Length: 227
Ligand SMILES: [Zn+2]
Image (cartoon, rainbow, N blue to C red; front, side, top):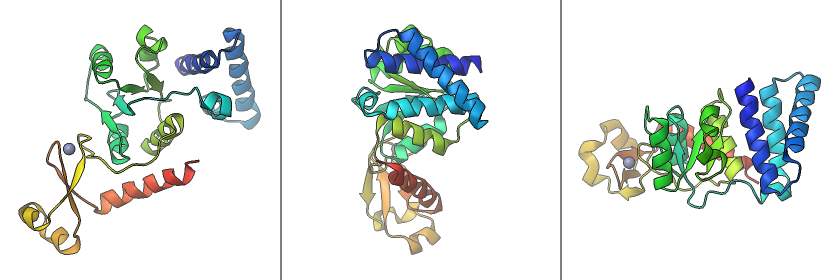
């Protein structure tokens, strides 16, 4: 818990700093105390109370204008967030992910492509380049479901669902001619569907099958919570 608390303290501090608040330490401690009280009175885990307190503060119009705003809207997910990377692509955003990537490489690559780092690793957030926002980053509390992670990232960055990108590599999907692809399409699918897409980067073939419909359903829920 102490690591999670520390990560929230960093997030609180950054928000207050952006708002040019004075007496940062007191501000941070006041917010933590507020979350502790909420956890106690509502009998919820402290991590949830911290998360609510952060979101409430960040949603206030004044803070909203100074929240993380990645210019390129491109993300680099840490090694444990492969699922989130795929869903972000389905929602239309470029998001890099490499299994087992070392922290140093992650920082280097993210900087190279001007991406915002998404991570659940509070130790990584302690790195100077992240703490000082030399490389933009956003910390997600561990143990969230992918849908919850996605909703949190959407709220934090004010994202809207866009045209889907290739879930494997993030490339653009181009509408493809069914007849030309006949050999690559399973016969049953060929009979039932007419719309097919090919990734312009990796060449993977996509269609709106059951898996896609489930994802599209989840993304539609995100549309509903967009304000
Ligand atoms: Zn691709």
